[in-house]
Amino acid sequence: MEYKFAHFVETVITVFFPGGIEEFNRKGHITIIPHPAKEIVVYNPDLDKTTIAKLKSLAVKDKESVHVITEKNFEGLSGDELRDLNIRINENMIRLDPMANVLFDDNSNMVIITVPNVDDGDEILETIFDSLRNIDGLLIAYVIAKKSVFKIEPKRSKQIREDRGVISADDVTNLIIAIENSKTVEDLLN
Image (cartoon, rainbow, N blue to C red; front, side, top):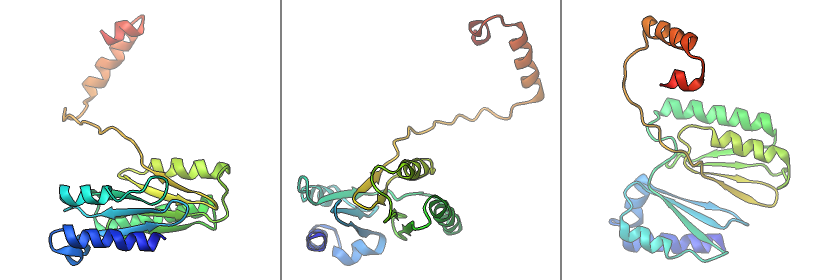
């Protein structure tokens, strides 16, 4: 059923995406997440609002669904950095479960991990989830266990950095003096 639904998604892209499916495939990718998830992930950085709306309208409650993404995982990393990251993810997953298989899609940098011998209640599954959630730049990943498919979407607030310069030795000395002179935490903060 997933493949028929994926063909339907391709038809919508052919009709509504400027340039059709050929132009879509230059930068984009369609990933089929198998049973029981039955989810289609559509990635293209140039998806317009009309095509996104048409794709999202295809979602069938409790059956197949369409997940549209316009940003790829690990945006901004070079090819060498992506290869190193892929190797680290593979090594970590194999350390957690020797039967783990990691798919790292080239276009969207989608990460799909298959752990065929892991049941839904196994403790190792939560360790795998935590490991994925702690990868900087990961927007979406899937873990396919023995009976279930899990979507991992780390929810992280963006860090706002402010350039304040380098901390000098005088700054450290002043902090030490402030700590020694403070009787309470409130004194230090004021």
